Length: 82
Image 1: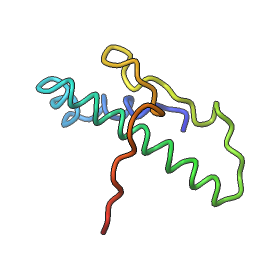
Image 2 (image 1 turned 120 degrees about the vertical axis):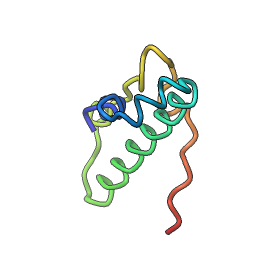
Image 3 (image 1 turned 90 degrees about the vertical axis):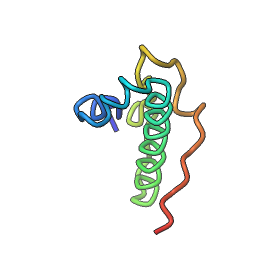
């Protein structure tokens, strides 16, 4: 994915409200979502037999104002069991 998840989150009012009321939790969730997106992208590319370049799954800072953590430093969220 070329666009960080924060671009989408910033466009959704529900996520902006969470960022206003609980910025630490919003940043934590955004990091987890970014890690999940990268993981899913790499897995789908692997299944399709495509090689993923590091730049194709860039590790942008989720929100430079809130964190310097990269997605590799964030635990992968639990997958939906349904």
